[in-house]
Length: 117
Length: 113
Image 1: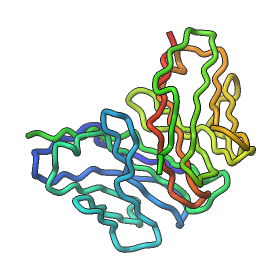
Image 2: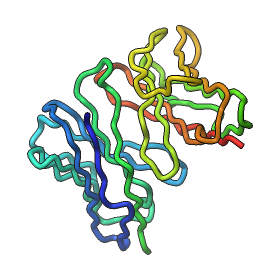
Image 3: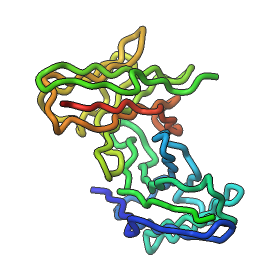
């Protein structure tokens, strides 16, 4: 069974600095997606960034980028120039790249990010 | 273009009552997923439905829980005879198809007293 592990329950970063959130996963599959979701206090789940496993190039979205190490099954999120609005719970998630009964998202337990002014 | 809508946002039930949670997917989406988030936990998959069909209910408790997605109207997650352990946030997500991105609603927070 696939699992997702986030080993940092809480992280803190100074405004304008850079922070990296860790995520590892376990799977025997080769074709899958990885995601980072943000959950602010409003509890709305917001997709931050996604990565297709077959792509070697790391995904980037503005201040957010990932370091995808497929062999190590590692998928970390880097937030540059941190802003107060980045404070939230961040969840790493995995999804097989086929549908049917295997198409659901598998989430880690989350990392709570605080941003200090 | 309205996003995924869930109602109610907050629901309080006494032990033994029934809870009905509704999810209206985004326009053009015919696939719905339900997830549950317990306090201090990530989201856990419960059930995946397409119009009038349950595709995967492997994450759903065997008793008291049921889900439907009728041809017309929202998807409903129904919890009968609620217990305190059912207190959680329930999220719905929708997508255009199995291999497409899932978009989440704001969730329903169920409190069982």
